[in-house]
Every structure is written in C-alpha cells, then in structure tokens.
Length: 273
Image (cartoon, rainbow, N blue to C red; front, top):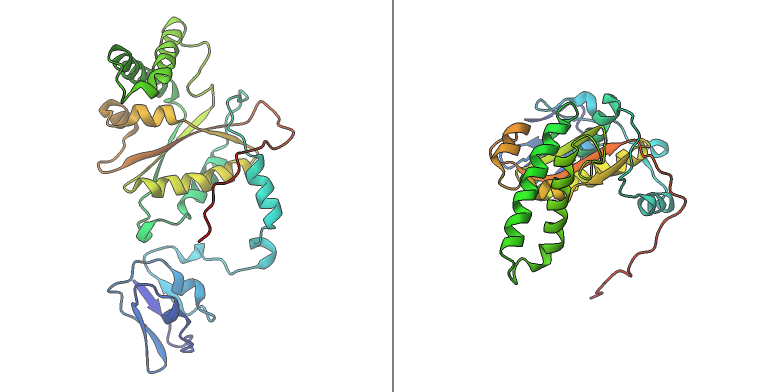
C-alpha cells in the first residue's frame, strides 16, 4: 500500500492534484491515501516535495531524486540517436554480457503500461537458441506450405513470405550449421510477452534504445512472432505463461557492421485539427 509520513507531509496538495484515480485527499492539512482506487502508479511518490510518501509493495531503494545533469537528454541528440538506429542482421561471434542484457530488461521494466499493469515478462534465450530456431523454422515452413497450397485473395499478400519461409527451412534442413536466416547467428534473443500486447511493444521500444546505447544491435523478428502465435510447442519450450501474448522477439548481439549516416524516410502523414 501507499504510505504517508505525517511528520514529513506539509499538506501542499500536489499529490492530490496529480492522483488520476482520485484516491488521495487532504485531511487536517495532511495527505491521506485511501488505497482503494489506487493502482500504484507512484505519481504521489515522484511529485512529493518532501519525500513523504513510500510504498511497502515495491523496493524504495530504486527511487532516485531528479538531477538535471544526469536525467536530461538533449532533444537534438535524442533525435539523431533515433534516426541512426538500424535493424542489425550481421553479428560478431561474441557473447553479450549478462549485465548488459539485464540493463536492457531494466529499460523495459520501467516503461509505462496501461493502468500500471506491469504485466510485461522477458524470456532470455541463449543456450536454447538452436532448438528455438528449429521450432520456429518448422512452424514457418508449415504455415508457408499451407498458404502456397491454397492461395486466396485473403492470403495472396503473404505468398512472398510463404515462399521465403519454405526456402529458409529447406536451407536449414540441408545444413543446420550454415547460414542462419532467422536469428542471424546472434548470441541472444529476448522474447517479450505481456497480457496486454501493446505493453510489451512499448517496453520493447525502450529496450531497443538501451540496446543501442550499450553499443549493441537488435533486430525485431516478426517471423518469430508469427510462428509463435498459438504454437503450443514454442510456448511450452519458452515457458510462456497462460494469458501472456508474444509481443516482440528481440535478436541481440554486437554488430559486425558499421553505418556511417542516417537514411531518409517518407514524409510524415499528419493531420492538424
């Protein structure tokens, strides 16, 4: 629950004003948190000028006071950082340190979730990559063959992918140790799952920013996500819990390529009202 230290509280009302579920009120010039409609977003902890609010549900040691020098990011630098990111498909034969993978997950953990659900989970695959690759390619091959055996107006847009999936599987069967066209010989994969899929997608976006900040590279594998949809064998192998959806699959490693500049994009389609 959320707890107010009456000795520290000065009754400024900032927590009352910033409480979206209206769970805080001022009583005798002190903040009173009812803990009825509260969904533990922590805004009251963050906004309190006297550090009077704590919680016994999370680790308060994680709370850091705001400091402009270490919290602020120049907007132009951030924009360039975003523009410069690339999807990486060439990786060095080098393991990613566990502390870096943990830091990437930490970036996901502190990403906002709808209703503060905090429902995002992370599955780090390293030792089991070859088995996950096999299961994924077998599934994609099955999906591809089904599409190609019955092309309809509804699935015609997927025919090019169906042909690619079948070819990828055939090449894998010929030589499983040769070219990896799924995970590209990366040393690690993080599968991000969530009860509410958009929460996992939001977390993954911040995770990729952290990946790049750590001089690593990432690829979001849509092929894996497609293969994992409703696939009992893949879900059991990864230990995905009931109710969780696969949001993204992040293929992570040290890039074996160096880019020199950003690239152009289509103009933004914007409607101003």
